[in-house]
Length: 504
Ligand code: ADP
Ligand code: MG
Picture 1 (tube, rainbow, N blue to C red):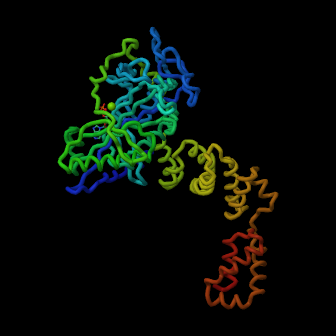
Picture 2 (picture 1 turned 180 degrees about the horizontal axis):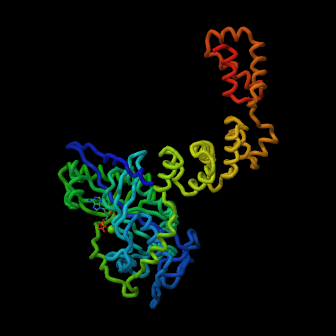
Picture 3 (picture 1 turned 45 degrees about the vertical axis):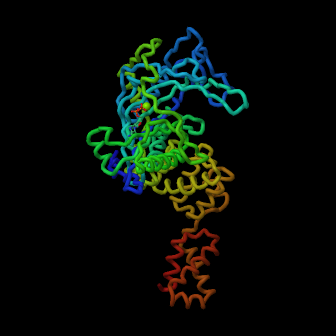
């Protein structure tokens, strides 16, 4: 089923500098909010947009004597995500304290997993067009707490803090530096988001900060990356800078491009890249230094004494594995191999699990290619135009299937089907009943069509003479017959009869 995984790797992006070519190397740390109603170590709600500081338990506010209690559901979500990325699940993991001072962090430390993450190595196949894909290795996924939010723009003199997000569970998904262009970085985040949405482990709402990426960028000379790959020795790569907290695919690409060119300019000038954390300013389209890079020892990491090591059982992992849905790569491969769709169409239909489900309901018992055309061209076209999502589609899968059945049985023509779709879209109703009530029935009875053809031919002798000399003019007769029959004659039959009568 996974034959589509035979692909060629895309070329890395090359930037021509004044002193030769440069290539990009990119690694991402994605923070994905775990889809869970309660926080990682407390029972407080995670509802987005709640009144500030209303989703805060004593644990989240770090009241003295409060103890964290692990939320089993969040752990299961991390395991599920790991399995979705074909990753190793660590039956023993542990939580560490990452100490730093910030007003939106009442504990004075973040609980994270530095030394023993719950998920180990995995991979993501990043599609870059039919037959072209990049395999990006996942280094690890660890569970950690989110921080609160400081608000500086509500008052000229005061800052405010909202602790609703404090303690919400995050999965930090760390890639190897296998991404080679801004487009791949965006496609990687999109694919990760797609997989997690299929799994139901992260909503992936980037605007709400549900999915954010720290983007690491370095540049090297052609050939250096291959040497890194052979040896896994990072010294073949350039020094990286990390651009923090990106939550837009467009900005991720712009920031990488800017950052790579900034580094190239420094290097070509004889300078050195200082490893640091930078921020992207979308208004100016540039990255700015935020702080020098911290090392693990700056955070005084140590095992959290309030939490025992996390032990999970293989049987529990197996149960989660058994409940996994079909993932995008497998679904896409099935649509191509079993239903005969093009890779492009299969990609469009599997982009969101809701679209794939809708399509499958339409295609069930019908011709796959035709169902795909209707879903993509008519339905998606119309939904996009009106800014609607598939969940809000006025035409259900059953209704669209009904339209296709009428085409399949020859009762209506393709043109009539489009009119019928339009009626179902605006007025609703059962397609077969609407077609019957409005007399939408194509005439396939050759006798009736023949009579109409004869009539038009008899009434237009001059036109007949011209068409006999020039077969291209036969189309005029077909048009006249279709008009005379109110668009109900089957165009193919009309064409055939016209040609015969004109002696072509
Ligand atoms: P740290 O914990 O100090 O941030 P990590 O080893 O966790 O360092 O790496 C962070 C991210 O940086 C990973 O996604 C990794 O792939 C990426 N990365 C490491 N080296 C480079 C490099 N030379 N260029 C680009 N990205 C890199
Ligand atoms: Mg890191």
